Amino acid sequence: MALLLCQMLVASMMFNGIFSLPAGSQAVLNTLGAEKLPEFGVGFDLTASYGTAAISFANGTVLSVAKVIAEDGYNEALRRLSLESSQHLVPPYQNPGDAWKDKPREALRSARKIMGLPASTDVGYLAKVISDLKVQVEGYLGVPIKSAGVTGPHLVALYQEDLQDAFDYVGLRYLAFPVRYDVLYETSATYAGYGYGLCSDYTERAACKQEQQDMASEVVMAVLYTRTVLTVSFSVIKSAYYLYEPDNRYLTNFTLGYDARSQWGSEEGYWVEVAKNLEELMAENPNYKRPAKVFLMGDQVHDKAFLQKLEAVLQRQTTDELEIISQDSQFAAAKGAAELAKRLPYDPYMSQEWNSFEQLDVKS
Image 1 (cartoon, rainbow, N blue to C red):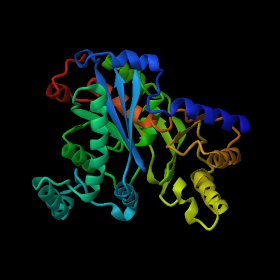
Image 2 (image 1 turned 90 degrees about the vertical axis):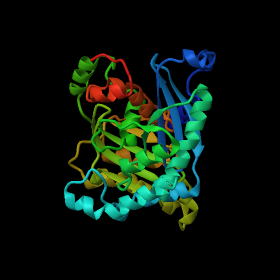
Image 3 (image 1 turned 30 degrees about the vertical axis):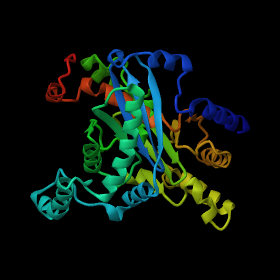
Image 4 (image 1 turned 120 degrees about the vertical axis):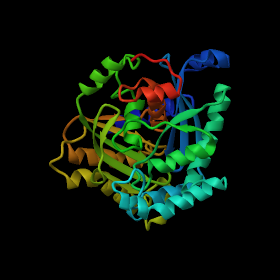
């Protein structure tokens, strides 16, 4: 175990800087004029306590560009959006009756937008982080960006409508990915950020589609640990686009972020509760297949005490040799969103009308 902890801590030091590629590669890109920049996709990760941005270029280079620390209001908004009590009707509706019931809420959002305000208070907090990331990405590139992909934690009351409105407010086009839950959750984005679940040549639409269909599914565990939250998922994934992560295979706890240690009677009690949360999903589902990979996300996952608790949980729950992946814990999700954004115009499941609207010349 000591060796594993040492390796993970070293990996964190190597990969969790804002620019994660060797300086030489960055220098080459920095010398390019704006008109010479290759085709690229931009990705944002709106995670708990901060946001990150990455760029994926057509030549295969993927850069971590920005990290923005969020204000308290943003963190409170995410906590609120994690609650079942915050869920509400949202388009597209299942029946005309739902549309009628939701008219007052939609009318209020429309009125706020007409007045130049964010569609809701929560949208305003999301938009602030998106705007800050947009500024830093444009400063790095030297040119304006028109669109971006976005990912975030699995929050039961965070809807595509909220992200769409936040992007509209800051003047960006929201890229909707062809994923199961409408919102690109961090489990999928991180999976893609490490290069998993992606076809080898995304410009060949038919071959890419077949390659994705032929991919085997696997069980993964994804853990997000930041200063404000601990989340755990016990998911099934088949390609970066297909994720099975129902609410009973995911938990979110905004009382177990790293900064909450002082709020417990003792630090020992805090870590006991962290271990319970890490183990809960597997312990309650003993017949579920154990994960093949464990993805660690967030800026606190390399804490020594946290890693010791995680190691003990995994040893109790499985005898299999697990692949624990945490080298780029702060930026992998943003990199995955950027990679999917770059690939979106070529995606075999996207309509030709989308490409026509974007005036993109891609292979059919």
